[in-house]
Length: 156
Image 1 (cartoon, rainbow, N blue to C red):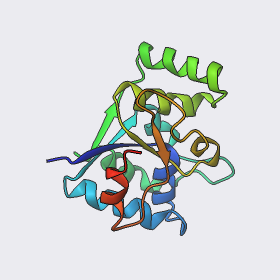
Image 2 (cartoon, rainbow, N blue to C red; image 1 turned 90 degrees about the horizontal axis):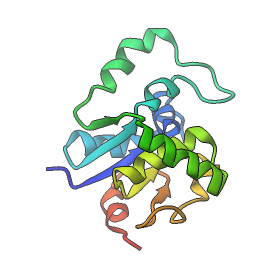
Image 3 (tube, rainbow, N blue to C red; image 1 turned 30 degrees about the horizontal axis):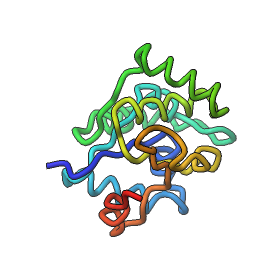
Image 4 (cartoon, one colour; image 1 turned 90 degrees about the vertical axis):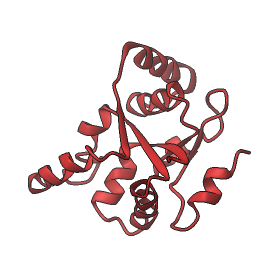
């Protein structure tokens, strides 16, 4: 049974796929818990395209195509469409909070599906921790391995 849900933006997946030393272990810890059925990772369909590369970094190589496609079909990943309701909410988030449009899609998706935690390594997005939604959306880095239960139970 899934204990909790968390939203991952594209930056988190890129940290994992690119094995970035400052991101990989935290991603791996959450993925392990997800694989064990303790966490459901929710994403926007936008992530499927956006995850191929980050600004100022090379695109993921095409030889990883099958691996990436298979990864996003994992049962512990729930892909949500960018429906009109989410796009309109995202537009309001851009206007009201000056959050970048792609990031606003991620925030709007998490808020629409009542996901309590959005994981990101994006410093611009992390500034909005507990500033959006009702209840307030926690926007934070993925917890290091062994700390996910503590992080998930924090409701402050």
